[in-house]
Image 1 (cartoon, rainbow, N blue to C red):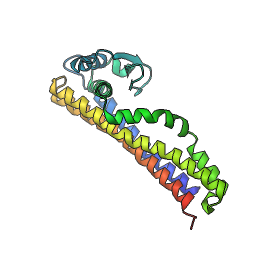
Image 2: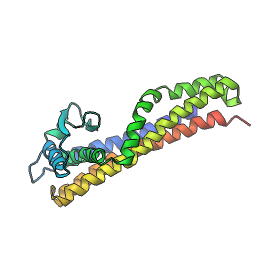
Image 3: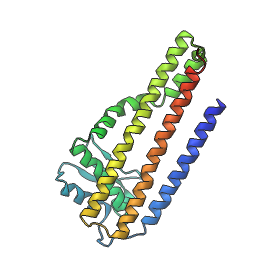
Image 4: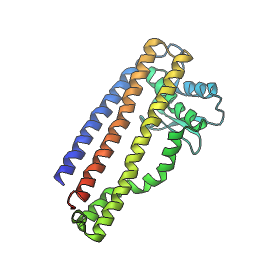
Length: 231
């Protein structure tokens, strides 16, 4: 178990460093005020209009960095700091979330795949480690019957979470690319404001990359524990 704790600790440290850097970037670019004077909510609405999307609503949601697009009720949810603010950070986040709405409207394949995985992962992700651990306790590493099958079931559960993490990557990168292209093509931001928006989204994407790598590393670790002791 010591190796597992070291792995989790290392992943948590890297995740914290990237998250801290992300918050620092957003705080910095929140001071870069937009010359056009548009708020995050106004930018989101304009991007929706420019893409001919009329059935998605832009709403405010509590918290910091809680921004997301909800495909079920078709809402672009912007945190209070993004919804009302008029800076490069708000522009980047608002456009990024609308990027997901555009993906939904155009039936973007990776977004559809991620949506199908959500109900599975929501059930299996919280229990997968315990199922694997239980299987090992029952003798999975030695290839003993019941324990082995329990552990493999846990690995399958864990595999869905890992798959979800990697499917999320193209979804997030594509949404950012759509956002930045629109901000630039429609001259929504100046060159300086664009650079700030681009840098902020780059660091946001890295949080998903770290999560995916961490999920894969955890899956490989437990896989070695289950299969490593077998002939």
